[in-house]
Amino acid sequence: MARPYWSGKIQISLVSFGVKLFVATEAASDIHFHLIDRRTGERVKHQNVASSAIERNPDEAADPVHKSDIVKGYEYSHGRYVTIEPDELAHLRVPSKRTMDVAQFVDFASIDPAFFEKPYFVVPEDDSQAEAFLTIRQALIDTNKIALSRIAFGGREHVIAIAPAPAPIAEKPAKSPKSAKSKSTKSDSPAPLGLMAYTLRYAAELRDPAAYFDSIKPHTINADSLSLAKELIQRKTATFDPTQFTDGYEAAVKELVDAKLKHAPIPREEPAPRTHGKVIHLMDALRKSVNDTKTSDTKTSAIKSTAAKSGSRTGPTLIKSASKSTPHREAKPHRTSPKRKTA
Image (tube, rainbow, N blue to C red; front, side):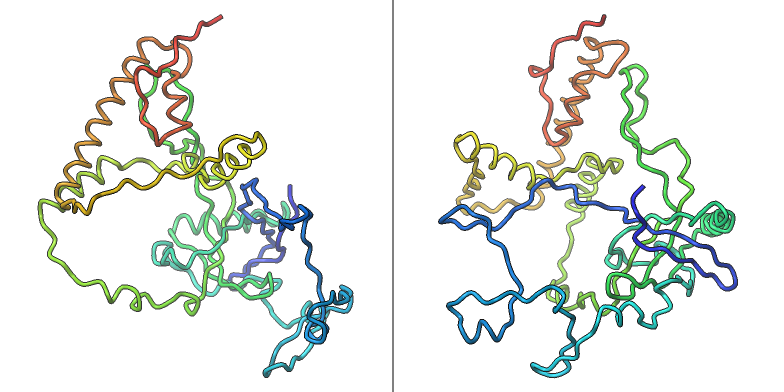
């Protein structure tokens, strides 16, 4: 297990128990760029130098400042600083550095999603803290509430929401067509015995929406257009499956790098189709969109029916496997792989 990002205790009135926080996210991208000198192909590195040295001799390389001589500085007036030593910051009088003192409990739905910032896993400090930890967790579940507190790390104090960890979203199981009864990705396994902590943004960090939304003028909504829009939404409604979403930008960069290494033609985006100034009526666009989803559903059902007849009886069909890897593309009958032979 990774090292905890924060260790301390949760305090609720007179009840307290030790916990450890672990960062719940990680950088999934494999793309990392460096700065390169176009002329020599060498990597460019930055050095810490004094601004006065650059001002005196802007055309000459300044001597770097040693790391041990660099401290933080607070600018209290233009060009004038108070230096702050690392030891002084480490011993700031901030109670939330060690204790998350719960201030109140609220409904989860009462918090605007715009306030949520980053998730963390919360686990008991050790087995001796588990009883109090699990008791509070169950109480939060039974009352359908989350706890609001404060926590200090990363150079600031954060508002933090503490909630029971939800049940994981399971990947779609590999089932034969006869046994597949549901498309739901919800897990049948119980929720993990843990808590989640979400750092929240402060109200002052969110811009005033009125500055952006007040310019939107009201329009009369056509009843038929609204009905078609609702039908389109219903037809494209599905259970959220996060595994179906990948970073298309990262894939495109990898494709570019691979082409350069192989001295192949550089892939470029296709030009947007010219519309010749033609304006598509909202009603026509909605009606066509609904009809397209009907056609797509009909083709998909036909393909699955064909695959069910020709596929293996004991494993998933090849069509299912292909559609999972490329959910945005419509499978076509003539691309269906031949029946696999079983041993």
